[in-house]
Length: 527
Image (cartoon, rainbow, N blue to C red):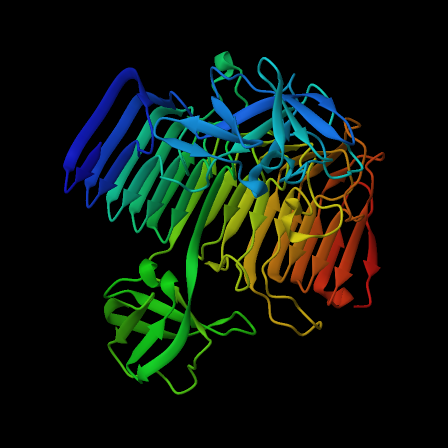
């Protein structure tokens, strides 16, 4: 259903289930105001993900049981092709994930493509619903076992489930998304979005472990307030949620009032105020107001209301100041049943994350801001993480420090700006982590890079013994280039794996430690 220009409308599904076929969106809401969508569920008769169960794993081949009635396929010229309504596809190499069959959770110490690319290789039918894939899978310290489940994706970011754009005062409530072809909910350039009890979840009665193809929810360059309340997501092909802005690169100047910028300029509109961001320090500088913007040759031509200052040069970036939201996330359940992390958030407005339960395969909360890959903007100025429970997070976290390993610690703050001295400026500011409970199988609780005024207070750190430790970070708190840090009044179990605070590119005077139930050891690192 498409709603364009609608005002004061409630779409109530009355508990209906909508079953889709082929490439479709669920809803498209554009240029609307005061719209509520509620009381329905969505699924696909033939989803764009298949799954199989490992029957045999040998050095020469892998046998996979695939329910052909649910996930139809053909084997042509020695290769498998999965089929649907008007489509056929192989397997996306980078999006295969392994699940524990009994719990439906991401298997311990597995991430993307744990098996390698074997499923696009030679294949043959060896029994009803059993396909043999010839070749060997990647050798891992934690091997694949018969009985585990693998999800096989047939596309990424195909079509959004519920898409919200150029609208305001939008509410979604009591919605279950069993499957969508990309993000479950995606909003951009919207003002005031509320999600009450909107959840992505696998269709367990069909034996599925997957739900959406991408994030459960994703919001780009919105404003006003985004409220996420009482949501529980599982099975999605990426994070629980992502709230962020976008950095657009200045490619050249037509004149000192007109810049040519890259293709990410679609997040900019006339009358928007933009910050200029320095490439090296990632700090905000001059502010520019957009007179008009037009698409040009894969990028955008932006005309400003005033002359651009001389210090603004090619290679710098633009960040939208006008379209930045406040965010409240509360009473949500983050389960260890989806690819990657829990929530990602970067916005300069106030953020409160409270009364949630995190049990994630990767980092529970990832705070970045980067100019080297995704170009997601929004250095924080007021972020509070309070009264949450973190349980055995990072069971697929970083064992080598590689960026694709899903996170260093339950709370990971890792902007792409990397301090190189104790005098390096901080990217984020005013982050408070207080009154939370961390139940951990390994040492890390916090990885924080480039934060000024960081407070870690009144938290409880408990040990679990549910998994073998393996994470590369061996300290409880690893602080890199942070300034004015307070660690106070925390209660740490005597059997907690570590009670160490590690400082990099910092002076000892940057850290104040006091009144902790069990003392921390502070380690000054030389780099």
